Length: 81
Image 1 (cartoon, one colour):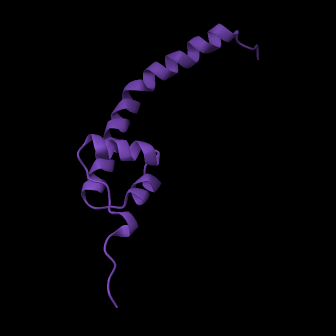
Image 2 (tube, rainbow, N blue to C red; image 1 turned 135 degrees about the vertical axis):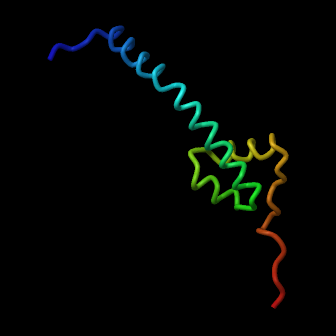
Image 3 (cartoon, helix red, strand yellow; image 1 turned 60 degrees about the vertical axis):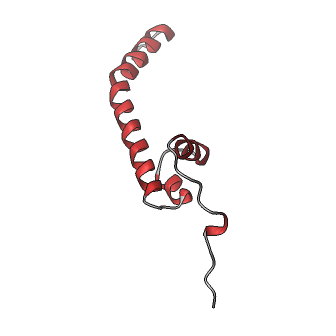
């Protein structure tokens, strides 16, 4: 099998990228909505990060940009024994 020239290879990978770009954008929007829904439902940001493709910094930014208050430090009030 003959090896393709670098620009021909780049043309092919660019074509594939453009073909999938729309679907990738739809998936990104859907996962963003689901991340925000999980945070609004009270899920711990650490757990949301573990279940999403986003970094902790990006999840914090999404929360901040959408008016979601940060979780209290230390996991909230401690129960008395």
